[in-house]
Length: 336
Ligand SMILES: NC(=O)c1ccc[n+]([C@@H]2O[C@H](COP(=O)([O-])OP(=O)(O)OC[C@H]3O[C@@H](n4cnc5c(N)ncnc54)[C@H](OP(=O)(O)O)[C@@H]3O)[C@@H](O)[C@H]2O)c1
Image 1 (tube, rainbow, N blue to C red):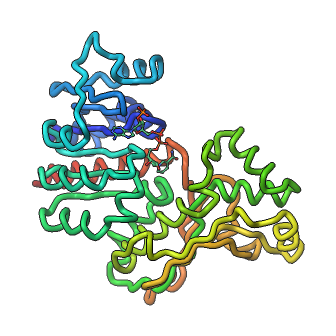
Image 2 (image 1 turned 90 degrees about the horizontal axis):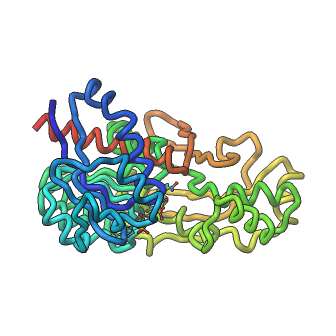
């Protein structure tokens, strides 16, 4: 049995869902993979709880859910005021899991890689702006840097492009990458104006209070950037052409519907060119997704056309990608 020490950064929706899965499935992972995961630290913005012997995850969940901050756990644990840079240096961990929304996390990702620690992340901006530097550092040191959950949550498009299709040349990807915009456009098809559909999405917790990242196409743009980096070559989000759905009217949506089409926010990813924009797609197209699904149509020279479709958001669905990456990193460490 190989014990793998995990440092968890971020204890929000995804971080807590990761902890729940590790509690529920830890035994299964030991039996299936011969890997025992020990969470030695958990960080939120209030502080870092650190215990080399391993943290009681049920207790951490209870504290966070009751008090909203890990730093309230002073009875049983030492709470440290480390910056993430200090934490990745000080804490002896094999795998760093970044499920924060820290836009500047690339700097502590680099520090962690230089300390020899594997990284698993669902956080998009580090990759969308610093892919080449991060992957360069990881490859130079032979350390896993894994990010399945940054694109399409747990639906394994990154693994497919990075680990399969190794003999193929990808020619083009067309993909729906943002479920909030799909929800808003669907509601507009049912008769709501953009503002009303957005308000409904916010009420249901589908759109954030500041919805600009979704409706301006930035979230889809980050993900499309990452897909380009994996399928073709490193670029940054600054090179991507992005137009969101904020200017779409109910009339446009309904006219498309009358022609047997639907408007979706589509990213088109080709070598050297990434665009995100609302487009009409036929109702029978794999890209005419509903609800929280994402879908990608990938064309390659050998395989022709293939479709990847599945959940694109949600804490549990995101954990599918995060935990799969934790196991991949752990198995690599186990193999030495
Ligand atoms: N939710 C999804 O469906 C989904 C899907 C794919 C990818 N993602 C990505 O996964 C990440 C987490 O999403 P989420 O929904 O869990 O977000 P969230 O609920 O807002 O949680 C973010 C967590 O990160 C913590 N945090 C922020 N900066 C930190 C720092 N410098 N050091 C330590 N902790 C820090 C926050 O601390 P506090 O608790 O103290 O605020 C919070 O616990 C985001 O990058 C998101 O884009 C999410």
